[in-house]
Image (tube, rainbow, N blue to C red; front, side, top):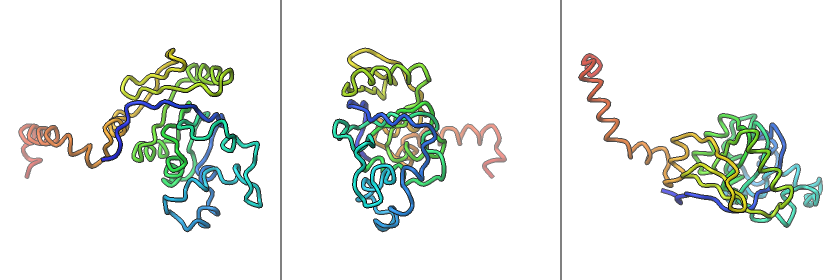
Length: 207
């Protein structure tokens, strides 16, 4: 069991690029430099080639280096976030940096699955809702976004902005702090009842 999460409240880092791939999220060279898959230093390499120059100095014009967004739990992205290769370390790196949710118009399928498994909430909103959020934050970048995982709605400044789509099982895992195994165990009685029903309907399946 991990931490249960019913809501997220915090500012968002606006990185409104489309088609952010996993190579951009976790470039191979710096990943090898920190000795592969250890999770304790992954925050160092997130968006490495955009955050740092050739000498390893932070680039002041990259939004993740902007002090006003330090500690933000939400990343506001564009379309098709997390495309490219299916490296789970991309999700680990976002979590290690401190993000609890990525809000976007769409996600690459494998990235979205990895996000749920690692309790990073992929918040999928329609184009109109996305535009309202961007407009609000353009006026007041420090406004906190409230994401209600139970009601599946998003609010800014106390006003509801819209709803979001989510995978039923993935959302249940995050809300209840469960992994796939514990979630399956929770439904053992239903699984056994289904097995009995199938055996009664098609007895040759039980042989």
